[in-house]
Image (cartoon, rainbow, N blue to C red):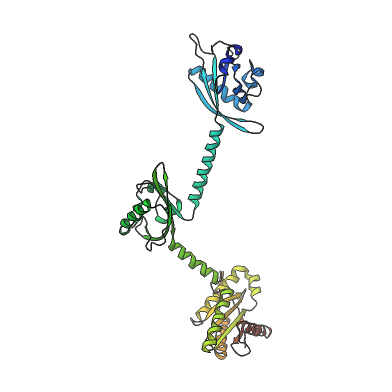
Length: 426
């Protein structure tokens, strides 16, 4: 019936088929395929109706972007006498559809076949679900692999199923070699028995996730044999009746190191490594409170580098930065360990001198002034000389707060500047 019937003969039969169904015939003279018959479902793929498309060339039936693949597979089906299959996208005005098309030759007793049956199944919903699943998987993979914390999943035999980049870095291992290996390879031998007991208990528990920070000795074993302290949170799920556990691990040695680094950054000046203004103010206030209890002397020195703008103008910021850094080193080297030095701002510095009276502070200022006066700074094989002006303040009835002492020292510094620079005023 399919090898020689026309649409009138075939239409009742093919309308009973629950998929898109059409028959094409290849013209023996021009090699073009024309539509012999099709059912109503097949119209979903076509530009027009079945009736409008009967005996039309295939290029008039389908969108141009799919013609090449369709004709190619039809010819292959006839030549090989085997079915060919492809998934094609059809763009509509308000939607996109995916169709699986199967091209099968209509075999005849004698001679080569000329007709091809095209069966089409709408797989749009399947494709959308596949796309959504792929997006979810990609998003999950991206989140897991970019996570700051290490993540490891194990199967019901405690073999590693998945390990992310952060976990590999914590343990110094490669994900390809880690997957499939026992989790106990990442646990020091002395803790493995406790780990097995804990996992067994957690497996039987009705709790699906549990923090493990209460374990005081959560320790991991790196590939090089060194140990690393960890914070761990675990969870469990059942997949197809089998238990899977996931651990989220954090290297707390790095956390401690980071906190220490952040603390230093919050307290110090980036260029000179001296205390910054904010932290110095805190230190000064605490020293004022200590002085109130013990009634011991307390003084500050403020000094400013003379004509520093000219240094920047002549030698550039590289030369200026070198002088600021070297001045900082000189000052720290020539004060006591109990003294605190800070960069107050720009080329201005301040020194906190606990248990120091005004006479002692003046002597320290003169010593520092003289050291800077005699020092030669070398920048790009050029010699640079620079001086500094100093202002001194000590705790007294008139200067009984940190703010008052700072203002008094700043006023005296200004007095040094206006009276010739390279001098100390108090």
